[in-house]
Amino acid sequence: MKRSLLTIVTIFTIVGSIAVAVPRQNKNVGILYETWFNRYASFTSVYPNFPAINLPMWWATPSLGRYRSDSSSVINTHATQLYNAGVDFIVIDISNNNIRSSDLWSGTIALLDAYRNRTQPKPKIVFLSSYASNGTTNDLQQLYDLVYRVYPASLFFYVKSKPLLLVSGESGCATLISGLSASARFECKDTIGNDT
Image 1 (tube, helix red, strand yellow):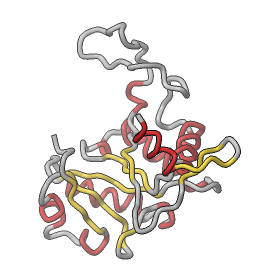
Image 2: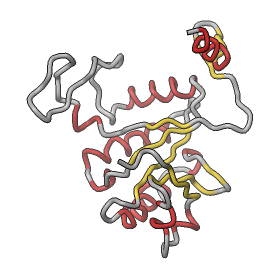
Image 3: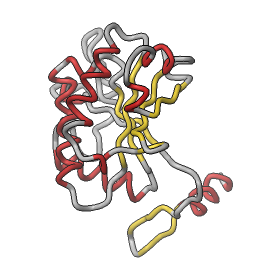
């Protein structure tokens, strides 16, 4: 308990009633941010009241209520909370071919639109893809065409002057971008531990 409290005090400085992260040297903090809640917004079961078999449920009612990922007020509230917590970038998961499903992709477009219109500080954006998904090579081109050609570069987190692209699995980057011009467009980094 003492260690946890010490860590929290070390990371955050209280300014009035708002917690603001202390700047870090040579470190960046990212957090996975899912944009597919539209699909599940209509489900009402809350633990411990289990829904019918194989239907999703809420573990508790979220502090912002049961929301959709395309809600600009939720997106802006999250952006403020994450920025104030010291999160440098959010990672949007498209590893399950989300880019091909309008109800899954709509939350991502809503987030990009809200971030483009937002004047207050916000975390940058990174995408997580998967080399194992069927057709991910096409998804990567579609991501580039629908996102990086349309939205301002200032929204994205850059490494070595290119937008960062995370790919799940060991050697995922080499598999995903071999033979593509993607290596010239993205700084690709493998992630391990989330490729289930």
